[in-house]
Structure formats: C-alpha cells, structure tokens
Image 1 (cartoon, rainbow over the protein chains, first blue to last red):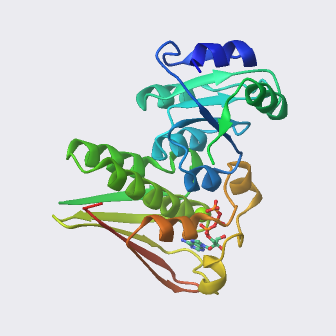
Image 2: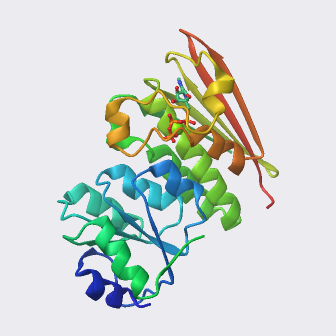
Length: 113
Length: 138
Ligand SMILES: Nc1ncnc2c1ncn2[C@@H]1O[C@H](COP(=O)(O)OP(=O)(O)OP(=O)(O)O)[C@@H](O)[C@H]1O
Ligand SMILES: [Mg+2]
C-alpha cells in the first residue's frame, strides 16, 4: 500500500520525509525498543506512542524507514532533525494505537510475523 | 582500524550516537548490509545499557579483515547475577529508562542472538566490560 494511502486512512500528517515514493505491506506496533530491535521489521513501518530521540535511533539501527506516531504527541524539532539525517519518514496522527492498527489491518496491512 | 567513543551517562538523548557513527562508517567501507545491521543492533543495545544501567563509559571498536570487535567498558554498579541478567524479561531498569522504551529485559539476549560472540566481565561495585564479536562475512 502506498504511504500516502496509509496517511489518508489513519488521518496522519507528514512531519518529514517523502511519502510519495514509499510502499508497505507490513506494519509493526510497539512502545518497547528492544522489541523493535528483535524483529525482522525492516520491510515494515513502525507504529508507536513512544516519543523520544531513542525511537528514531532504534529505527535507524533496525533499518526502519518510517515511523507513525499516535495520540497526537508533539514531536520536538531535534527528533525531526535526527530523522531527516537518517532518511526516516515521520508521520503523526491524533488517533490511538488501537484505532490505527484496526484501520490498517482492515485495509489489508499485515503483521511482520 | 580502530575507533573510540566516550559515552556520557548523563544525557539519555545522546545515547546511541556511537552506534550510529559506526553504522555509517561500516556502510562507507562496503560491509554487507546484514553484518551492518547485526553490528548496529548489538552495539546499540550495549551502548544503551551502559547509559541506563551504568554511568556511561568508553567504547572501542576494532575492525580487521575478518572480525568486528566492540568493547564497552563502564565503571557502573556491575551485574550481581549474570545468568539472571541474561534471561529474557529480567530488568532492573529505572522508571526514567522505562519511559524511554527500555527495560523489557531483552537487550542482552538480543545481542547474543545478533552477534557471533558475547563475553561479559563484571564485578559488583567496579563495573562491566562487554565484548561483542561479529564475523565480517555473513
Ligand atoms: N552495563 C551494565 N551495568 C550494570 N548492569 C547491567 C549492564 N547491562 C545490563 N545490566 C543488567 O542486566 C539486566 C538485563 O539487561 P538487558 O539489556 O537484557 O535488559 P534491559 O536493559 O533491562 O531492558 P532492554 O534491553 O530490553 O531495554 C539489566 O536490567 C541490568 O540489571
Ligand atoms: Mg538493555
């Protein structure tokens, strides 16, 4: 599914990166960073409510190229800068993790494993 | 080739910078992507540990044609029961570390799974030295 379509479904806004060129079949949701690092999640985008620099670092280490932040969290400029340096696309939605996962699952996005 | 980093124990937002830098260097050197990812994940878990469980420390990374060797040395509290610490789910992470998304008790196991060698030398009250070895070839 095109990332632009994912944005439409989850009513997400783009904070940085290029949504036009990305396509995903899989998603992974977690607030535990070691959990993210354990998974073969590099073909997936990450859905998380965890807003801090380590969320970006974790994505960088795990080769994850897009993060969708849920629950209308404020994303500070230093996080956006770090994501830009690492070529990571950031999205934000006001909806909850549960809602976002439900909507995407229904639309055909599948779990990483 | 040798690289050395001083990791601060005070600023959680800086944790992971050394691992990020090594990841970029390995990319420039044309190391296989699978090896880079395993190295980045292992080093990052250990770097985070030295920040959240100790007070930062020194990381030395050595590259030779066959291996990547990462030595992380801290002068933190040490690990009283290493066998227990290695178990999935065991964690003494502080509330502050948990708010950052750490403390699942999965880091050491994750390092073991991703690396080709993990050795931990630890003395309670003196500190911990973690040595991680990865093979250059996948
Ligand atoms: N450098 C260290 N100094 C002191 N104790 C450590 C160190 N590294 C690990 N430990 C101890 O080992 C435990 C397990 O570490 P591990 O990395 O597996 O999990 P964690 O850091 O608690 O959580 P996670 O890595 O999942 O975020 C830690 O909770 C801590 O008690
Ligand atoms: Mg850990």
